[in-house]
Each structure stands twice: as structure tokens, then as C-alpha cells.
Image (cartoon, rainbow, N blue to C red):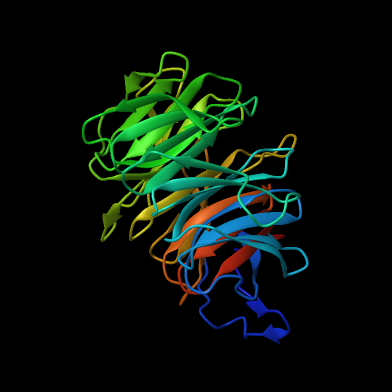
Length: 335
């Protein structure tokens, strides 16, 4: 069987492949660790372009990074508490950042280092960000139980609704749809109609807090991840959005909180796969339909792995608490 091989590179310094290496099935992987762009933990990462990613951290900074060249392009300073989520609008240079300072800031890579828009109104940390498919509306969700819909151009809050105990952990806009999906600390998943600004479906509550969610590119499936400990909870769940509340499979194997779950881009004729990252310091790749774990990579010493951003079907970026940003390249093993 093939092994997952981890090679850590920090600019010119090469660490031994055996350092912190553990192996699991069917992928050979090289892991590149870049010079940290943040002073402290990285909480969130997303893609801005094929070469550029955006990250946010405990140092309150929003950083644009060329991960292929291993260099920082821009650092935005505007929040006064740690950044919890970053989001980019596809095909543009827009960047949105949410923070524990209760605000969302909008930046443009081509318009200097000051925010071009500010969205204020939440009373607690903002954990959820989603942009409508046409790029005109912004959805935000917070631990204050409020879900808000904003006009991006004017920064005006057009819709607000408070749902009791809905401590929002993540928000996704369903591609090509008016529907929004969000996870919550109350262990449920809610589907919203952005036109009426009403909850249209509430999934059956899970046993543990739902930490993150992602929607498949065709809008048919949702994957959510779960808090947990000692192997209890700690899973990701695939749901069929065409039958709200219909659980398809569960991805089990993490030993601590599953912090992030993402659909991987599917090459033509290729397998459909899901990636998860965990507080146990591992990234797992799963067959979407069978829930078979295709490979596990442990990044020992990196601490909780809190966010993933697929760059293509064979690689993804991973944000860690202790060791900055990792670019993980997955190569199918040859036997």
C-alpha cells in the first residue's frame, strides 16, 4: 500500500520526512509548510485566485499570500480582535473578513490597504460569511443568534432575524440558488430562503455542536462537521439537500473535533471526494459516496487544523494553530 509522506519545507529549511510522520492508505502526499504570514494561529483560509490565498488569524490581520511562490503580497489591518472567517467573491478581487470585534470588513486587493466597506450590527463574534451567487448580497451569522442579509454596495442591513439558541458557526450560500445553509452550536443545521428571510428547513439535531458546512458545486449535497472528543462525535455527515434532513453517509475516524469539511473539486471522470480536518492534527480524504477513508495525514505539532481550502482536485491549503499555513498535495500512489 502507498503511504502518506510528509515533507515540511519552511522556505529554504528542509525538515526530515520522518519528523511527525504517520502513514495511512493510498495516497503519497508532500506537505509544504511556508514561512508564517501571521503572528499566532491562523483561523481561516480561502482562495482568491489560482495562485493567491487569503487568511485571517489571531493577530487581527487579513493576509493575501502567494502560496506557489511562498511570499506575502498584502497584509490588511483593520480589525481590533482576531479574524474568524475570510471569504472571497469568485472572479473578483473582493475580500470579506469577519472578526470577534463583531464587524465584517470588505477589502479590495486593487484599492489600497484600507477597508472599502464596513458591516456593523452584530452584538457578538461573527462566524458566518456567504455571498450571493450574483455578488450583490452578503449574509452574516453570529453567536448573537442573528442572521443578517446586507446590500454589499451600500452596506445596509436589509434583513435580520433572531432564532433562539442559534449560535451560528458557519454559513454557505447554495450555488445558483436563493437558499442559504448554516450550522449552529445548538447542534442543528438550518436552511434559509434569502428572499423571504425565513428558515425553510431545520435538520434533525446531531449529538454534538455542528462546526462547519460546505455545499457541493451542483447544490445537491451538504457536508457538515461535528464537535466531539475521544472519537465520539468528531464526524462529518453528508446530507441530500433535495430531501432536507436526509442523511446519506457519515465520515468517522477523527479522534477530536472535526473542525472543517470541504468537497474537493472533481476532475472529469474522477472520483467525488470530501476532505476533513480536525483538532487531532489530521487531514482525512474520503470517498464521498461510500465514506471510505482514502488517506490520512497527521501534521504533528501543528495543533488543531481548523480550516481547509481546496486549490484543485489534488491539493488543498490547511490552516493550523501552531505552524501556520500548509499546502498539501495529494498524489495517487502507484502500485
